[in-house]
Length: 74
Length: 156
Image (cartoon, rainbow over all chains, first blue to last red; front, top):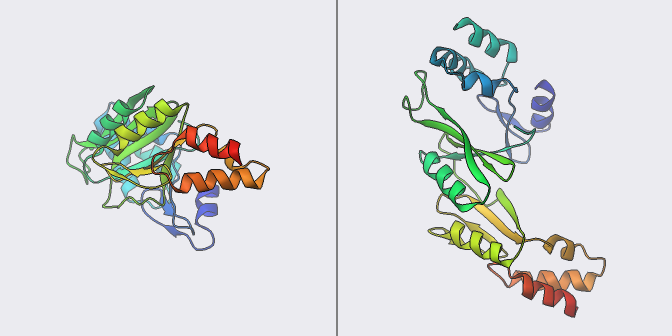
């Protein structure tokens, strides 16, 4: 996560919200932890809402914080 | 999901777009749909994103912020034969806009390149005359015609 985020943004890129960034060539990327898909498609709406809420406040996604949001909403 | 996937952002009509692309391509299906929950910003229960699988390539089709598509980024479709070129060209350009050299923009604004298999090999031919003849033939086309391209290649 950190590696791709930092490498793609280097040299004139721009960070955006929710794991999105724009590289120095103007191409947009989403750098996403593997577990996010599972968190967001959980049948428990409380869990998915918590994860979504946590994600909407992030620029680079933080796996530990997303996991905490997912587990807390049990 | 694979390491690298494509995500397209629509302005509210992602669901319609996902259904359209799945209807156009063979071996295509919607494999996942994510709805907005209580947190928004989209209306609860409406489609946030659908993931479609086109022959093993996954595309996330989402309703996103107010972005505009541009031909600077396009999806590159390699076709097995002219019949496939014709089919994808007709279906994807319906209600959209055709461009040059095998490019088209569909009715949702997404740009596609509909390319016959073998074209890239002809472009890379070691004989610069052949590569140039193919390029010249291609520059005059809208929909690509593999037979005309091959004839230009063979004649050079």
